[in-house]
Length: 277
Image (cartoon, rainbow, N blue to C red; front, side, top):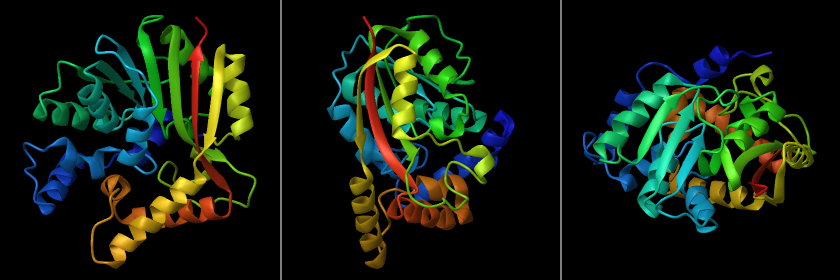
C-alpha cells in the first residue's frame, strides 16, 4: 500500500515555482505578474485543463457569498478561476506542501489572497468544521485515495445540508491493462481506480443524493487530437501542466494515459451530486 509521503513525493521535485516562472517567461508572460490566461496552460493540473474547469463552472450556480472547497487543489488554477468568475471564497487543501506554497505565491501575485487560501492536509482528515461549505469539487484526486468511503464521508461532513459536490476523475474501464507511469501514479501501487458504478454506490452509501455521472471519453480523445494537431503545426499544446509537474516523464505518462483511454482501460468521468438537505 502506498503511503501519503509516497504520493506527495510523486508530485514534488523542489523547484516548481522556478520551473513555472521559466515556462511563463518562455511564453512571453511576466513571471512576477502573470495573468489568469497566461497561467491557464500550467495551473489546471487535470484532464483537459481549463476546458474542463470552464465546462464544470457552466453547470454550477455559485453566489458571491458562497464558500467552496477545492479538494486536491494543486497549484490553485481552478480555485482562482472560480473565485474570479463567481466572486466567491475558496479554500483549497492538498497533500503536497510544494503545491500549496506555489499556489499561495501565485494567488498573491494575482491579488486574490483575500478570497482564495490553501492549506496542506489530508483529504481523509480535513481541518475544517462540520457543514462549512456550500459546495466542493475535486479534480483528478481520488485516483490516489484507496479508502474511497472515508473520502466521501469526509466531504459529506464538511458540506452544508443541500451542498453540492462535483468530481472530475479517472475511473477504471472495462478494457485492458493500464501501463504506468501516469500523471497520478508512478506504479500501480499508488493508483486506486474505481469503476463508475463503484463510485456511485460509494457516494450513495455516504449520504449523497441526486447522483449524475457523465462519461467524457469522447471529449478527452477529441482534446488529445486537437492538441496533437497544434504540436504538429509547431505550436504549444493548450495543456502543459503535466510537463511542468513531471518534466521528462510527461511524454511517457501522456502516452500511457492516451492509450488507456483508447483501449478503455480507463475512463474519464464527471459526477455531480449533493448532500441531502
